[in-house]
Image (cartoon, rainbow, N blue to C red):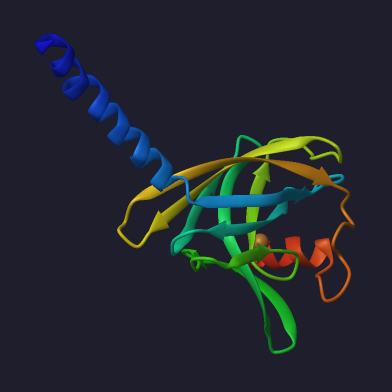
Length: 169
Ligand SMILES: [Cu+2]
């Protein structure tokens, strides 16, 4: 009996605690991740998705085997011109869905390893940092959509997007 009790306290209790910790960490949900496909010599493109979180957090970084450099970007109108720039983080308030979309926040894939053809999927690892400084990574597989996807209503032309990016570096 004694050995059975010590088994419970030494093995089972820590296991339960670690399961709770894991559940608490899994607070970010990503929906509909996609990447704008590329043609010809395009070396950069954007990735888009919806992000929701149960607790306040921030998207502070991303990585992908499809690109040598991955940055978090925003687009904004400056003097009537749509420009993009790298930012340190995208805030994700608890209980709200933040949309990364053409013309707004996006994850920028730079120095693509190869062209991205529609129908392929691109693995992206997203890093979130909570208020307590704890980091959580989320893996997504982003579907590659045609170059023209999402280019309506205020969205920038892909060429202008790429050019603005080159300018910014
Ligand atoms: Cu960008």
